Image (cartoon, rainbow, N blue to C red):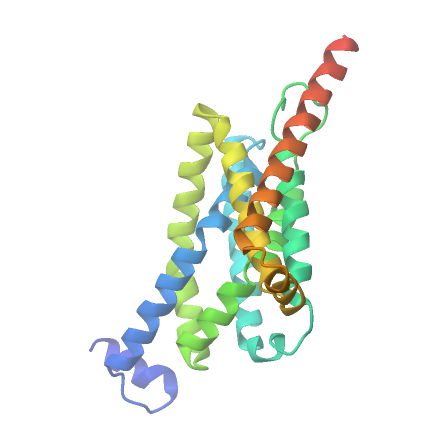
Length: 240
């Protein structure tokens, strides 16, 4: 199948069969489908950097995020046994959505700028927080094959980088996309929180559909971000 059957299936003396490619394509598909939110985070985290530094932050940030996610996938089986992990991740992601949104508007009116290190840190933390569902899904699809996990991630990286640059371009043209991005992050956070058994059964006991929690969190982050940005703008002009 090429390159001496991928060096006899990466030194394992196993034949490179169709199962390998099916698993690899599945992992790539999962990375891309679940990576849309991550592309939004990358774009939002890097939007205030100059073009040269922005590209550097995107590449380095995604590279570190991919490595972190790869290692998390290897130990995914242990993540399943950690209580409240998904719920805590959802709360952190909700806070990240709010912070990214409140540093977006009025970027010419608020003192200070985002550094490359700060952007990289935001990308990595957000990716790890948001990547729990990705980690578990990939671990199952790869059937414990770490080679497939890392190959899938490596193939997905260029597409994630390209996607984040497209989103950056659109943000400059249509600032409302910032709020749409924050809403998507809040929706992802609500899904993580509602999948926590304690929250899931609480909602079920009271007959509350999970979508209600999603709508509440989306409304909260968008409204809070909008009001915070308006206050910052008013304060700025009053001080002029």
